[in-house]
Amino acid sequence: MSTAEDIGKALRALRHASELTGETVARRASMSPGKLSRIEHGKVLPSVVDVDLVLTALGVSEAAKEQFLEQARVAVTEATAWRLIHRTGFWKHQQAIQAIEQRTTELRLFQGQLVPGLLQTPEYISAVFDLLPDLSEESRIRTAAARLARQQALHDQSRSFHFLICEHVLRWRVCDATVMVGQLDRLVSLSRLPNVAVGLLLQDARMPDFPMTCFSLHDDRLAIVETFHSEITTRDPKDLRAYRETFDRFAAAAVHDDPMRVAVEGVRDDYLRGSVGA
Image (cartoon, rainbow, N blue to C red; front, top):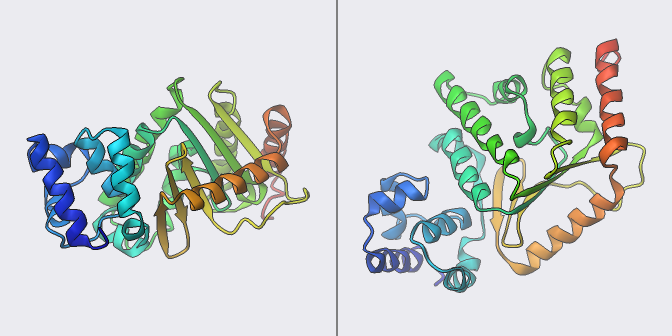
């Protein structure tokens, strides 16, 4: 099962066996019927996320899903260029990520570029998307709304979230100082949720590794990795183990709980004094 045609044929056969319509499966998988049709007919090679969403929409058992994905792993472990995500709509991408997060019991996220999306204030979100070129106002609004909708998951006590953030992210001026003050206050507030852990990697601490990329681990089944030009998804057990070990090394070097909150509030106070970026 190494080609788009093979994967599409297998997914189409599973859908026919389930007696579900393409419209129903597409809706459950947070994708358009047209996209599902192109996948089923082998016209596009689906990403790991696409395959996972379709299999879940079909109600395939976890054992069968893992067997299918293991066979398709080599073909579907790939990079999706940001320009393609831009073309299809960032808001649709946010919805696809939300669908993955809804089925994640334990999320681990390492972020060395921005405050994690699940922790962002509306004002910070707007500032981030203002940096994207050629993004229409409608797309900007829909994307921001989709990202805010994802944050509802933080209040689901049956799930846990562990965020690791590099200190320089808090000083990275992507918006006005007043927006950063509000963002840092929100970071402190959300860190007090019983199912949310926020670790901060201090700039003067000894680091166990290089923060080369941002990535998220969804339980022990999927990793999503961000690079400057693309988003990479993988289910390869060896890849997942490497990212888990990397996350654990950084987590051991980070400060959490009250020491983390003291450090974040210290950066916030620097903004209030005007000493950040001055």
